[in-house]
Amino acid sequence: MLELSAFELAGKIASGEVSAREAAEAASERVEAAEPEVHAMITPTPELALERAERVDERRARGEELAPWEGVPIAVKDVLSTRGVRTTCGSRILENFEPVYEATALARLGEPVVVGKANMDEFAMGSSTENSAFGPTRNPWDLSRVPGGSSGGSAAAVAAGEGWWALGTDTGGSVRQPAALCGIVGLKPTYGRVSRYGLVAFASSLDQIGPMTRDVRDAALLLSAIAGRDPRDSTSASAEVPDYLAELDRGVEGLRVGIIGEMMGEGIEPGVREVVERAARSLEEAGAEVGEAHLPHQEYALAAYYIIAPAEVSSNLARFDGVRYGMRVEAEGVHEMFRRTRGRGFGDEAKRRIMLGTYALSSGYYEAYYAQAQKVRTRIIEDFRAAFSRFDVLLSPTSPTVAFGLGEKVEDPLAMYAQDICSIPANLAGIPAISVPGGLSEGLPVGVQLMGNHFAEATLLRAARTVEEASGFRFEMRP
Image (cartoon, rainbow, N blue to C red):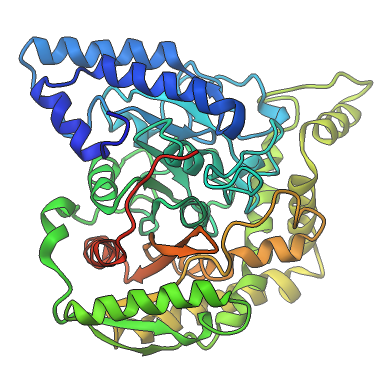
């Protein structure tokens, strides 16, 4: 059962061939077996999974029709609110915080069989899941390496078979980059396609919830479940949600694919570049027209992101002060209580970004930094607009390297930030992007990134399906 895709398992649950309880038990046993090595979970929830799975089975026994995703065990990044289950955001400051409501993305799964809250970089800040207050997650392909971040726990949980799929969040590549490093599919939808209600905000203009799955078909199915307008989130879009599964096998005949020249040069490992070039050839052989695309302001994306995102962090994390949420360190006077609570509650990376953001927004520096970064963001959006006038899909590596060693970049924040250099532009522009395994380099998975125009997820999934089938890469549970 553990080798099935989520789509296949859902079919067996719906037909009664497998019960949801059996699936939940199998996932929980796998969590117990893999966690000592992988540490993908902050809070395993085997009892919750069984309780909800039994309710799914009871409904089916009464003759109720199940949604095509119900009963499939899922891991959930610990930044999404889960009613009655602690939501830590990978931080000591929320170590014992239990929300009283469910995030919309989860609620839309009906009775989500949650097997656990997945580990993550603190408040989604990082590219390796080494910034979690609860210890790092290890890559199931090589336990001495990182799984990527900040949704590294979600990616590792799927790769290790601890859940058939997972929900992550992507602010600068945090769904796609760990998916690439762990050999699974990661999809960042268009900004607004999925409600952010119940997501603890990191950078509100960039955050998006996305599926992390064993294959492209599972990604299409999970996106179908969670997409759509939510009146509780004013930034969610009212755009019609297509039938992603029905669109999946249309192929890529006549599709115009542009390889982004600026993302194939310096800094990209030769093995990674080779896999992406092979993916481009497979798209061409399948009938797509392949050419070279350009994003002239790509080189400024990383700098702009690391002004805009910390600026929003400094605002969003101000609420964690010992008064309204989470931990409080008692002290004489309210200001001293604030100082001690935030000093003890936040880790080094969170503090670094809060200080960067506060500085960028401060009097005398706002125009020099934040306003300039927003102008760069506009240029990048214009670059994409020009590129999509010529191409339907843009192609690049997801990450410039394969998974790197644990601790290798901890002391060099700039080298760590550079891991997201291919993924950040899609967040700045709010467009959808998907990472699909394209093959191996040095025995480790390489992710191929496909980016599309706003709300073009169906087109991206078609192209990703073609790359997936041509690569010969199939999900294989690790370790």
